[in-house]
Length: 400
Image (cartoon, rainbow, N blue to C red):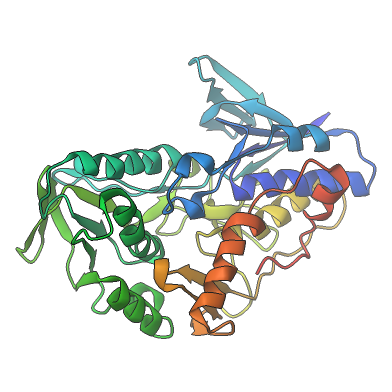
């Protein structure tokens, strides 16, 4: 029996597993075991962690895995032995075990880059379900504090996609906790020279309009230099009194990728070929946030998003299985790129293309409805119906 081992139960890991099983089913092969290793048999719906009720954003996967014959192993990988083709992991009780592989799919995701900065222990984030829940608990606790500017002020460090969605959702969340008449202050600190600089000129007008309507302040061309219990100090010398600092700056590939032979980009992502095999590595594929993969022949590469992770997973699983059973792989291709940026109570904005050109639905309410559908329906795993789940894992299905 040959083994395909997948590390990670995020979007890339889930769809790698389903696609590998689909490929094996198509050829009637029963001699390859697909195993997925992760701490929980859950898909944590990370794109929604800026919203309230974060504890509800974990979709169970065990029933689905049982339906499609994916072997799930509870554990956290900590060592990849390429020579022996084994992955060592720890169970929840701390016991060390190992799993063999003939093909390994790295789908272990990304982590927030928390810098070695004075006071970093005081910041919150929306990176993992536990840390986003910690933030939610903290926000609710603000109602127990006496009225003050610091209590009513939230600083969001970082004006990228996550920072913007977090900041624009905060006024609604905070008023539900502190009262509709509370004088709130939500401040985004970003090193870019203009509002939303990281997302480009096409999408900027919508971000500016939403920020103005929601009362979101931007301090551009600055970064947070240090944090303490009572506020933040910026690198321009400005101080802001606040009880809440949310860090959204910078993501990098899971450090486990450092154990894989191969070239990496500046974010730690593994360079892969058109079949998503790590270049120069005989037995390892990469998908999702750990893969530096060309989406097309125009020089565009996958970004750290569920949009790309789902497709990358479908191709990686398909190709790992195809290689083991001796059939032709499929070259990864995802030329269409879209974004749908949530802008809180103001609405949302939908764009197409790598220049992020605003496209229909151009109406902010229609775009908001689309974003709601994406967040609540489209990115969730399929039901535990074997035929439907495997059909959904076809790499040729467009994600965007």
